[in-house]
Length: 97
Image (cartoon, rainbow, N blue to C red; front, top):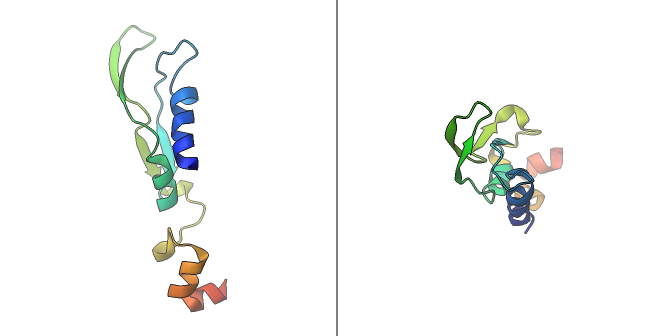
């Protein structure tokens, strides 16, 4: 539910100027599975806009780009798992935490 609501909010509040014209923007995420899954609900339409020098460009709005340096924690094989799934699959690792 959150990811879909985020996608709707981005469409309404981030990707458009007050006059309704598109604002060129990109979407940066961490490389973690959960952030990429959340970001998939943010639309990536091709929009036409005019630059400040009068050039007309087609732009892929909110094209996602994942950066590892945005990862707060790399969970390796456990990325995307709940704590319960980690405990079931890797009990020694879960106990060490």
